[in-house]
Image 1: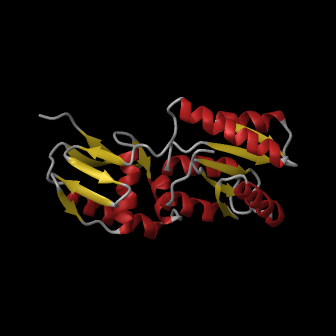
Image 2: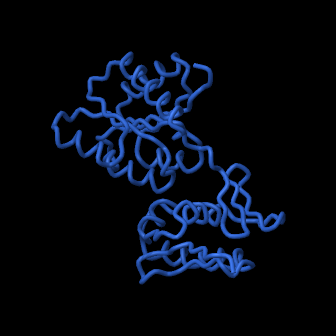
Image 3: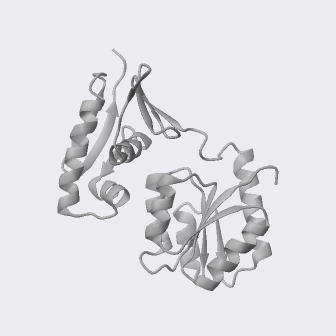
Amino acid sequence: MDETYKLILVEDDASLGYLLSEYLGMKGFEVLWAKNAKEALLNVKTNFFDLAILDVMLPDMDGFELSQKVKTINPNLPFLFLTARSLKIDVLKGFSLGAVDYLKKPIDEEELVVRINALLSRLVASGSEQGKTTTYIIGDYFLDTDTFELKYKGENIKLTGKEFDLLTLLAMNKNQLCTHKEILTTIWDKNDYFNKKSLNVFISHLRKHLGRDPRISIVNVNRRGFMLRVGEEK
């Protein structure tokens, strides 16, 4: 490979996880092995990956649900499923959720590598390689996900970690609703009353940070969630 691709492997089976991560590493990939869904989500929030490999049967959350949570964090991250399930309905469900491939266990390591190389080559060739856009334009503001900075006309605005994560999620879904559940499970890992109160506080902070551009608003949508709305320039 001309460049090293970074993969996240989510597999709770210790033997298989070790085998696949070692084999893929030998084949030139950089592999992060997460043993459950919670660990996977924490890593997707803080790291760049070219491809996610998700086991369907996980102890804390099935791979189908995990894939949707991953998409709220990074909608451009392609993923494939590994599963012992052989039912056609499960395969169809995987593809309907956006999977780029679906491999049944027991896994043939050589076939997995061939599939991964083919997928990554196709994604790069089609211009679908994720991670190219690392700066979100929010009116007159720029949110840089490489330097973790919010900038307004050249001035850096200091954000806390939670403020940055929350604004990034809203910016990724600009002018679209982010539900309370999506935000809380993504940023706080738990949807409960106390975290919802904290969310309201952080929304207030972000409104102040973004207050210099009157076109920008963070709207509370019918108690369902929040939307980062950016209007047309007047």
